[in-house]
Amino acid sequence: MQDITDLSALALSAAIAERRLDCRSVMAAYLSRIAAINPRINAIVSLRPAEDLLAEADEADRALAAGEHRGWLHGLPFAVKDLSEAKGILCSFGSANYADFVPDYDDIHVERIRAAGAIVIGKTNAPEMGLGSHSYNPVFGVTRNPYDTGKSAGGSSGGAAAALAARLLPVADGSDMMGSLRNPAGFNNVVGFRPSFGRVPSLGNELFLGQLAVNGPMGRSVADVAALLATQAGHDPRDPLSLVDEDLSLDGSRDLSGARIGWLGDFGGYLPFEPGVLELCRGTLDVFRRLGCTVEDVAPGFDMARLWQTWRTLRHFLVAGGQAADYDDPARRANMKPEMIWEIENGRGLSAAEVYAASLGRSDWHRYVSGLFETYDFLVLPSAQVFPFEAEMDWPKAIDGRAMDTYHRWMEVVIGPTLAGLPVAAMPAGFGANGLPAGIQIIGRARADRDVLAAAAAYEKATDWLARPPRF
Image (cartoon, rainbow, N blue to C red):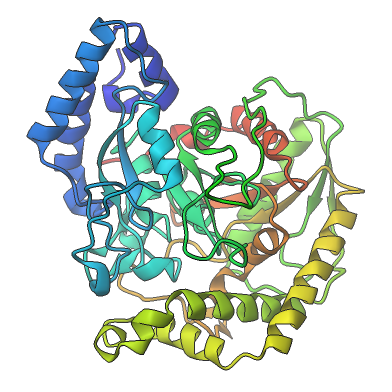
């Protein structure tokens, strides 16, 4: 039999349900691997005591023996991204200001993961308050890439992606405002899925204006990701913008022949790319052609500089509002990273008219992209503009000789799907000459999450990149 930690989440789930594996053996195998590998990559943080976790695994085994099967995650180890609350476990948000915050509640999607039987073992590392696509913070330090521990694992779901690649978790949750389920998936050769906005409900102080960030699943296969999404998704009255329940089961036999693929690439030279990244990602178009798709380059048709200004305005506005109380306390402000302070101070300088203009820009972008879907079934983009960079860097200051004027400009490639609220599967694109992974975004129509997952599954079957884990 395969090593337990090599099994997919669904295969592991079936083995437990059929009593071919017991939950204690599964937990012991994962704890052993975490002890051996996590010190080298720092993906999992706030790990609970082994004796407590093994005791919960024993209880899960007793429940099975009594005929109680709680769900497909029954007995599976699970670590929650450290930007979501899990009852009784430190939730630092990667910030020194929250280094002792232990919530007495679960976020909605965490509630659902527990209800499906998962055993929450700890958290996965993230950058401070999720800002920046590189998972380092003053509480736990930096998460390193399993394919090269000198490189970044990306972010903000970098801990989750690195843990999946290193086989420290069978499946994981993440969140995404500016590519945080997509960039780390590409950096770590795993699957990330940014759901349609509203697909996965969440708790929050502000319920109506914050329409950029989403929670979603990550995994080592599209099937695992689809299964976790089905667990996370569905309306909850505590989140008034959450979508009604619908069938999200994976159609793993979808025939893509005849599907029309639009390649957005670098938007006609607007975006800079590290040499090798764009070429590697463009090479994935041959996979779609082999699947019978028609593939075309999409000619630029929107003012991308306007889109960037739209993004900056809305992000400044939301970060400034969300972090206002900490900023207003001088002692807590002193603990904030410079990028956070920059966001807040820019946000506080905005007028209502500027925020409204940004909303109009976002609306125009949505209309433009909706028009593209009259011609194409799916759009494809790289998931990052660079390969994994040095872990000691805070962020890339230049790409191919072009200076980056903000801490997140190097991730500009991901803002389009976010601003349109579209479902996106982040899939591997292979490995560069440097041996490092890269990825693509498969983007679908509004709320067509199930179609995007089906396309991603077909793409997965036609490639073997997910079967190339890092070596330790």
